[in-house]
Image 1 (cartoon, protein in one colour):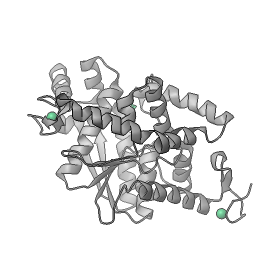
Image 2: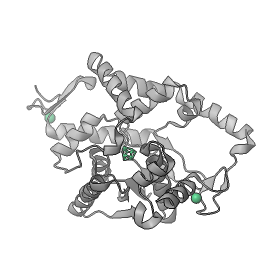
Image 3: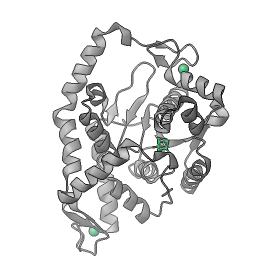
Length: 307
Ligand code: Q46
Ligand code: ZN
Ligand code: ZN
């Protein structure tokens, strides 16, 4: 197995690209995929301040490292979810990476700052934890970016994540979600720009990148992920990919090239026609919300009062 570029021994084969790469050219390949993603969707413009959502896992640490090697100055934000040992350990990985590269890592601990944890919120709402977790992370990242003058929030969603979300949305024909599923969501009143610079890299690639670049990351999966629908979709898509390499990428990239824009236009037109979706400010925290109190503040209230 030889590297496609230099013919030296390869360390990884990427069937989707019909290519093998040595360490050096695999890293160059990862950088090129991220560079292309950023350029194609104008994700980060020169001089902008970027906040990376850092979990301590392979994707967010690979993202932080890749942004650095492409010359972007990015700080990290770690959100403490209070998921027992898993959270303590993930914080250690995030902190270790930041220290080793002399990067700034901000921390918002849900329990300390907001008085609840994700397991607590899940039992208070009697719903799957990932709903409360996703809502809390989105809220905290956005609020932190706005409060601290960051122009853009970058998350480590990779090709596998995005293809699995797309699969779920198509399965139920969630047109509104499809209209909003995009690697770069523009800033709006009360919302920072959100970008996913890893959407062209698969999870096998981000893991290999970390291993080759000696980035220590949390391998253990979140214990609350069991039963998460997306895990099932990922397995299905992996089977498909094994039979037909490139399927995941053509599914996701085809959607982005040929369908997303029309769906986004339809969603926008519907939102414009519907007065009910006009956003006001949350009376508790000031975040944009269609109601009086935003979903995060409602969740926090519920989780605190039952804990
Ligand atoms: S951390 Fe949170 Fe994930 Fe754990 S509770 Fe679910 S959403 S699985 S990325
Ligand atoms: Zn090579
Ligand atoms: Zn609020």
